[in-house]
Length: 467
Image 1: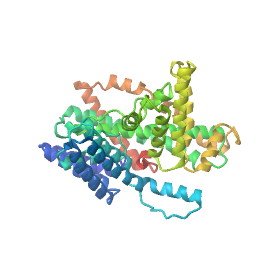
Image 2: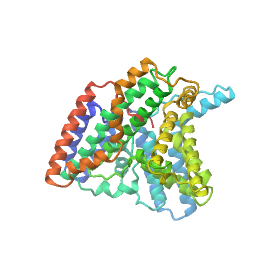
Image 3: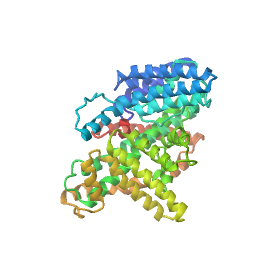
Image 4: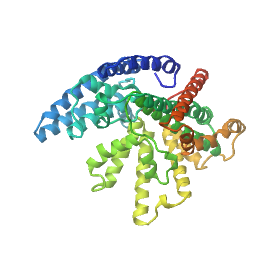
């Protein structure tokens, strides 16, 4: 089940809200939220509910054991075991066939593949489980005494399948002590509707154009056309994922939870490092605190640590060599940027306007590594984007596609900036009577319009579900 679906918007969400707010006690509300979350996930992945239940129970038992142990060596062993269990499941499900097929290609062997259907959002809920056990080990959070409450944290439907990655230490107290009120409901539904609009209006529209050019019309594509296609995919990816994050954060507010922001206008970045401080903030923060710093951070083996983090970041996005190349690309770009500043005194972020333009050209070019999983197509795309071995001018078929939709690009670019939000803050003033009336009307209108659009749309994927 996805947020931008008739079933979710027309049945699941209204029923969930009615059941939740009819209950008065915290324990009952938590139980209802847990049950609807399990139903939400089981809608598309019924068998994997068992895996979530079992893995959460293993984490629950091991974390309780670690929390009462005084022997540091023993605590480290227990932590290593529980981390290994979680990562082993992730590896077998998501990466085993990738590594075996790669080995078969290199060696000529014919080792059998498992062909396990990857559950939606497995990387997200695995990482959330890891933050719990590590935070308890580090004593950054109290151990959870209730298995049901821990399962609620892992399986909560707003952020279960596409994030943001929510750390246990950020919301452990909110599980039992939070305040659901009308202000939070209005603000949350307004934020949800904005995210829904990003997804249904912008992401789906941009994705349709990108697919028309990069998939349906790829053979013999011209340089101009592939740039338009990649730009549209770049816009689609932002609106798709930031829209989902908006929806998750909004629904969290409706149920009384405060999730941290996951995007901060990344396409306004003036350096590659700045871009990654703004894009998928929860993932960058996870790798920084749980991988980069424990490896030594900036203190020792800085280049190796950067390479390791970005190899993992690439693999996190998918079990495919194009994602490995994507990770290596950004590792190289970050090292280059750091050395330019340190050794040559060139700080890209200090270059007005041109710095942002240069960064966006690099980011857009890198999206080809993200889009094409077929290595042959990827290499063709990388050459074509540079004008090597292809025609520059568009064909008649390409012009028909581009000219039909290109008018929408300026509106999408503006929507990537803070301008719409700043205008919205003036119109929909928060925490005032008139502002709440405007927000209530706003989310009702947006919700209904998006619902109508969803009924009529045939193209409605969520890109980050595969991660």
